[in-house]
Length: 452
Image (cartoon, rainbow, N blue to C red; front, side, top):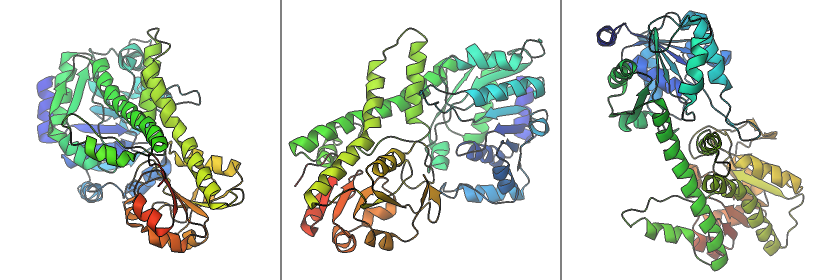
């Protein structure tokens, strides 16, 4: 279609959308397209997820606003899901890729999902379609690899001639996706101006946010990585300060509360580590990108990763110190982990720092319990999660706050002292008032908080 034909099909609602990958970001993305009046089909290899969606069960209960949108677009028959690419791609005008880009065991970004779908698009993509990549990728992956994969060697497809390809990197924060989709500007880049113009028209229709034009795909992806690596590095800086402040008797939370009053200070907080599918992966994507240009020692990003990945070890050291004060043997003790998700108030454990903490506790010979409101009566990391917080506390010699879920912010030190078998509390998220903890008689250790 020409630009004008695309524009007419957008306005008439006849444009057909296929979103490949309907996970944490892809499903809300697909629902947003459908909610704008465009017929949308979600494609995923997870047959259980597809069946759940088609049966009217929304899997992301921790995403405010989207359960209502989900019900609306299903009722209007604007959204459905399938596992069969041959039933989705050939009938679609726009293909949106929202696929995972994880790391392998050597911390090298893995783009196999995109490569596989690229080969399938070569087979099933209709001439004149537009491919939009929302997945977070290294700069240059579109131009240097994915474009050629979709084109293939048989001259059936040629980018810029009979199909378009561009990017609009997702910017959503899990747990706040609808809010971010309605508020945060989006970046648009493409291999040619026509595709760029069409993508902007489509996204303006769906999201009604500012769209920032990028000169190409690689620049748009560079911006996305830069913003996330910035966060990872700043968290690493705060985590390293936390280690220093603990030794010097300075409370990092007092420092940060005062520091954030300065107009150009952007506050970040210490913790047990940085998890999730974004920040750790994005830093390694940037490291890998640098290596392709001969920068084998991208020292500042590598150092940031090393600091953040060391924080689970530090949490264990705090626990050992507290047990030493309590004159209790950590071996065969029972440790309760409060929160295992990688961030508060969402149901997601990707690269959570809770996992290495649990592993290290097992190595020390401790028994581990898990209480997380999002995983009651579930099995995680080989452990049956608890369903009752009070009973779990009664059976535990110590607790470690790993994730600051809202319900944990109301835990009173006096209650913990009277309930735990032993008064050991490790607060990796600094949600407990350390003075109240001391007054209650807890043996309290917090990341970035000196002993009182």
